[in-house]
Amino acid sequence: MAMIKKVDASSYKMLSSFVTRLSSTTTTTTASRTGGQTPVENRIPTATGDGDVEIFDFEDTRRLFASVPTRKLLHSALTLNVCAMERMVDFSIGVMNSKMMETNRVFREAVLKVIRHSAYDHFVAGADTVEAGRTVNRLWDSGLRGMLDYGLEHAVDNESCDENTRELIKTAESAHALPTSSVSFVVVKITAICPVYLLRRVSDLLRWEHLNSSSFKLSWKQQTLPIFSESSPFYHTLQQPAPLSAAEEHDLELAHKRLTSICDKSINGNIPVMIDAEDTSIQPAIDYLTYWAALNYNKGPKPMVFGTIQGYLKDAGKRMSITKKAADKMGVPFGVKLVRGAYMSSERKLAHSLGVDSPVHDTLNDTHDCYNGCASFMLDQVSNGPGGLVLATHNLESGKLAAQKARNYGIGKEGEKLEFASLYGMAEGMTFGLRNGGFNVSKYLPFGPVEQIMPYLLRRAEENKGLLSSSSLDRQLLKQELKRRMKSCFSTNEKQFKPTTNSMANN
Ligand SMILES: Cc1cc2nc3c(=O)[nH]c(=O)nc-3n(C[C@H](O)[C@H](O)[C@H](O)COP(=O)(O)OP(=O)(O)OC[C@H]3O[C@@H](n4cnc5c(N)ncnc54)[C@H](O)[C@@H]3O)c2cc1C
Image (cartoon, rainbow, N blue to C red; front, side, top):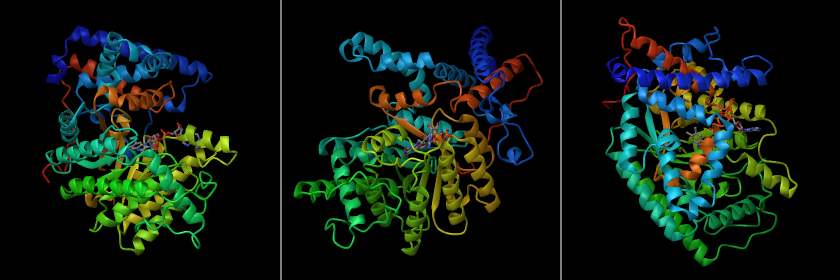
């Protein structure tokens, strides 16, 4: 309350009315598009008696956003409302990709300054480990954890891979200085530590070996878990690939060493490593390295190296069950992050250009079914056996289904069997709802200088574009809470709600 009162009343009123105006424009336009009805995505879910009330309580925005300062709420509301304006986002993307960004220093500095104070502040955890650490502390105080992701994109040679490895080791070191358990994972993209051309070559060879297992052997291949199912896409490798040259084998060995040094640093401080999934042309090599590391590090009761499976792939369910079974047989706890997948257009484009079936489900409903089916399978598995599941999603229905099932199994914070995860700056309503529901919840925290993080920001701008984007629920909840706080400024009998804090804060 004291904090709210500190906000200058007139500027607060002005900003709030701006936010309200932006939001009412949103509702009007959407309603006209949907024949006058408020679309489902724009309705705040209420307790329906089918279990909603137990998992998410979106009615009580005071409780939901109790740990978020008003300044931050206003900033989020403004950023998400601007992101919902398609023309504005298209214009911004045009500016960021324009030639002038390369040729005109003054123009570039001005644009970067605007980005730094808008989308960057909203979606990025900081410029370096110190700023990201501050974000982790803030999240931890409000009952959330952080997945530290030093925003590195594809590396082309060994030199940049070595430089990236040093940064990832620094990230793991910085995580150890933060409160115990406040960092749930150090995130690694294999494309940052192994040249992409080599991942392509290794993936080709792995595919060929899988298809010709009786006659074709890879001498350099180390022990790993199953990477393919019969329904996996093999069309990337149409003919027998040349064997790895001595130099390529050496480079692959370097990639193993880089991954080992990152895992050593992170896991010695008891922080698990999360390996992201990318596109199917290189994913077999990513899985190969991930599962190789999992066999080396997942020796205790809980997994320390997690891979990622994308539910939009037609082979996701089959692969998940084959790999989990093989890990169980070897006595290795299997840890997996389940996502829907972020490379849909490029996957479909490539398949189309080759005249083959897309590896991505034909309909969005099939993807939803696959995602929810995989989540359900893993919850069954970890409820009374080894393994860990990270459910990375902003989809309310998937979150609700999994949370209800986990609750039925008695899976909560203890044992660290299940972690919900969402991207920093997104799905705040769902994030706080799951936290209030008693689950472990992490925010995925990309950090790095603004120039380096630009491709990530462009993807987020694209994802939040449009009135029906996944941020529509957040925009509505933020508006409702800002209105409530504004009213409470003028009311004396409103009590400050005590936020849920992290029960592991003193572990
Ligand atoms: C913590 C975290 C980590 C992540 N890590 C990764 C990662 O390692 N690798 C990765 O690839 N992605 C990753 N993502 C991104 C993720 O894959 C999704 O792109 C994003 O989260 C949106 O999916 P959603 O589950 O939130 O569901 P929703 O908000 O319901 O999104 C559904 C979207 O899925 C797409 N879609 C999927 N299948 C279909 C289909 N068959 N037809 C039409 N549309 C379809 C559409 O664009 C649709 O809008 C991560 C996301 C999070 C939150």
